[in-house]
Length: 149
Image (cartoon, rainbow, N blue to C red):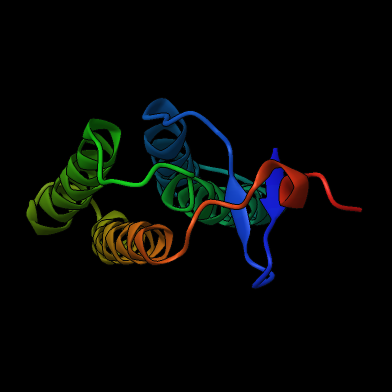
């Protein structure tokens, strides 16, 4: 799926996707919400859910990197949709944090998720802009360079 070029960077040959970034963001947040506010869990279940949320957060970060470093030379519609969805999840999590109805642990987690989604959105935009700028500056590798051993 990826290819090394002369400068050692890796470029993804994936097609642009929207559902993977957004889906991982929601699954990470929902698992964290279940760990914090899921009711009468045992300590083991809470720790297991928290570890699962951390693992999904890692997968979420890796998917953001993959989508940001795709080999398209411009900012596309999928990039705008990913950015808007991440910003929307940040706003939704902030809404949970400011509402007076959820218990305090869920409100704190909502604030943390809001900050995390905002950071993920900014990270995606920065990485995507960096990747587009790097592709504009560097010429395409020739076919013989693509298949070197």
